[in-house]
Amino acid sequence: MDQPRFLSLPNSPIETADVVLLPLPHEQTVSYGGGTANGPQALLTASEQLEFYEEDRGWTPFEHLRLCVAPPLRQAAAETAEDYHRRVATTAAECGPERLVIGLGGEHSASIGLVAGRMPTPGTIVHIDAHADLRASYQGSAYSHACPAWHWLQAGHRLIQIGVRSAHAQEAALWRSSDRISVFRDRQLCRADGWHRLIAELTDLSGPVYLSIDVDGFDPAVFPSTGTPQPGGLSWHQGLDILEMVLGNRRVQLAGVDVMELIPDPMRIADMAGAKLVQKVISYWAAARGWMDRPRQGSQVGAPDE
Image (tube, rainbow, N blue to C red):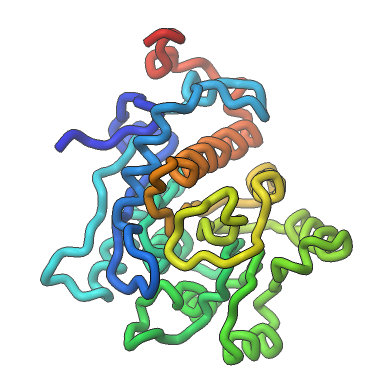
């Protein structure tokens, strides 16, 4: 099988790439809607319909950046969950700290390995999600899609949880007891004071930061196809505002990003939203770090009719 592509662009070797997309077609602990294993390829296929030009920053990022879509990382039949997540962590770490690494999921549990590989020392996780994901285990697995934030907390990270509108009482108790969790519940963000508090928190960010996006954090009008949808959620433009605040902050050392829990959508709305979200992440990150002023690579972006 050919190596997957983003925007139909040729793949640079990881060693020379500026941006690495890491597909994680992982689906082992889903508890409601199935199909997350097919999410990464659906996103990549939808990306073929995007323009190279990114309208918010007014530039064509891949005239300046080199891209690699890495081979998909699947859990082998004889591989334990622990070993799989360890392999994800090793692969993510081997991409190197100088590159932007974006995980494409796949169920959200794969973010456990991604964060371990990209941010081995304590930092801040900005976590967009409809769910708290703070369970120590769920349905018999400590590596469930309901557990990534628990792993991050145990590793010493600070959490900023955005858009949450579903939590167990024990997870809510953690919100109250831990001084390393800031939670911005979905309905709070519909009010001016809640949104302003979030802006202040994100504006003050500095040091190592990882951005983890479960697409069910958005309104189902934006991502209608995901594993465990909930009513409410971030609008598309609220989500972009959050990306701009995190990725445009020059005091942030971005360790990595992931976009998880996409299920292919017969109408292709969710697929396209996921692809566009990844494009925005790349553009905002690179523009804030001066890539517009760097020499054009000139070889990746074709003419309009190609």
